[in-house]
Length: 347
Image 1 (tube, one colour):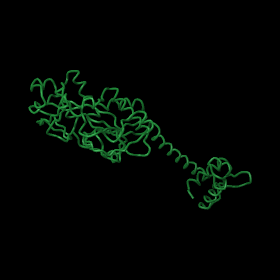
Image 2: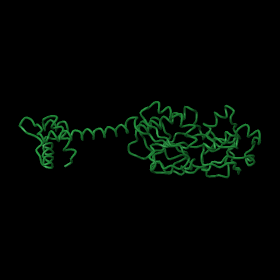
Image 3: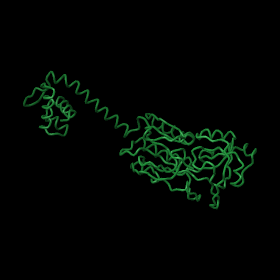
Image 4: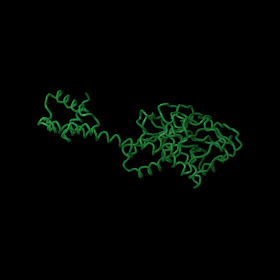
């Protein structure tokens, strides 16, 4: 017989001084509770109750056993409550992963807002451009680009973010401003090591025409933050997300290079382990970040630009909405679009 059930029946019988009352509280029959108490007494080799026709009371051995038994039951109930908190309340640890530059430039402001809204949460943030196994590293949620080819994960599409080429005015004054895609071949280029096509820049023109230009790397780095710093220092022309570069272009720190030509945008997703129960903190984090991207004007309509991403469709998941998250709808993904930061390697 289950020892925890025996223990629970014993404690309730002590508290109510009645096997019948204990049975009613536990949703059991009186004979079932009596049987559990007898089994407990037999296993311990002592009598735990003095019994009369009207009530029961613990013996000296029963009172000593009750002290320890009640403590055990309370500890188990507290353990149950602590797990329930993690699943249904905004508390505990939330481990978040994202590519370095995108995480610092876009996700960072949202993390601060989220922490202010839920001060009891511990945010454990990992910003890296290296491949990270979400499950092996114990991440609750990660922000990824492209389609994720991992059927262990649930994928929520947050939207599409544009990319563009840019450089400092000082660099362009010194080296000249490209007028056509082929002019890029004469410029220094800041190469991101995790891009699949490392030696060419694919662009789409205003009329939908395609161009692929071989470039000359001035610096190659696997860290997007270092590339961004080199871009602002005037080392060369670089590629970045428009949500990060556009404010710098507006203030004059950078200039848009070949503004009539478009680089393929990125499909942005939130991914998290494919569990039956998705914690409330994960659901709210993803829903809030989707709203944050929309509010800051980060999302674009790639169809209106006649751009098809990286040559493949979006992930096998619906566009994420607040209502979907509230209902905890799930979509498991196993598609083949290539993304950025080697998660997996992309364009």
